[in-house]
Image: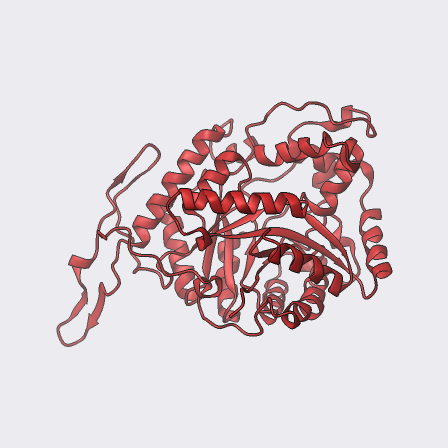
Length: 442
């Protein structure tokens, strides 16, 4: 069978464009409505997507009045939401963002295991290290943990998760009514973990999940984040603005995975793609202009300021981006923005950088007909730049529905995307094996 593309649906609020919520047909009362998310999940599953992904953060972006006033800073709690969506879906994977900096491994291992049971093997978690002091202050700290320490904590977090998921061997749960035996104690193991950040006795009070380990996603773009992903991730969500940068990243990432002692294809790389669709190229361009006209310059500048953690309103809009100090936040994203600003391309000014950020949040934006969008996706996929895409519809539900109804059939006609699900679990969709039990000798 020919290699098949993987697709994720990024369900970010009412849309992935900062002004997407203002588009006709977007139900603003849907943000806290289960029916809204149920409909999105059903659309993505109708499109045979591998997974849907719900982003999260543990703070609110209120540093800049314009961001708080004119963009959506509400973040519905994802694990609760995905547990509900597990009941109304049958095949699509369910992925939630989890902070390794502001959580403990035991309750997260337990919640993800339960989601995996409820969904019959479709759970995934996107591990993030969080990025702002605003989040730290919700957890009794004044400043965010140092970047290096955050990733050291994240690595230890994964080790403990795996020990807890594996603390029950397959077959440990007996339920023999004749003998009265519920479980075999010889097949249940304590974690007895004591490290720099965590001390966890275990075992988990749930059996081993259907997938063995729920799928682990990582999205860090710093050098440290990429090294972490090579060691632990099943999927990488990456930010790649061009085919050339994506192909370079793809080759390097597969090399890092191999160097970490894993098969090169055991980590699927899925850059973000923001499609702006129209029945004709002119219609797509008109929709793109409509979206951008809804974003005044001062909101775009505030949005970019929030991303780089530096107030850019003090500088001339049409002047160059100043040299910004390295932050303790998203270093990879800041480096990418600085490279764009110094490239001599269209993104040289603060204004143009800000416009690009609100248009596509650093990802690849494709404006065109369904066939034109499919052309780009096929070129990236077959040209060694990715294993699939995380689709960032600019507004919901219409943007995702148009992609499913018009782009997915174009991909299927080309033989590069499934017509039906061939498996049940997310690992089966991704072509990943069920992992061995790390608590046992091999």
